[in-house]
Amino acid sequence: MLDCEKCPAVERIPGKVSGAWLFKGTRVPVQALFENLEGGARVAEFLEWFPDVTAKQVEEVLLHAGRSLAA
Image (tube, helix red, strand yellow):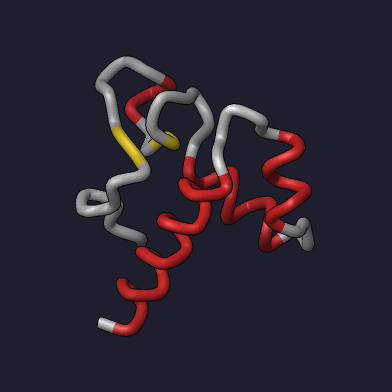
């Protein structure tokens, strides 16, 4: 499981979307990014489908995930 605690692009607010990790300032769960990528979507498609999420946020989450896997 990815530890999002140190990723600046995400937040978790108790009671908001059941306490899931969300892209900061949105109601879009980080999990939605990974589910869509696993399903074959491209990042550009994800950004089109979830316009409140920025490309910078996606980049930060993916970089964070990469660093977490390398550790």
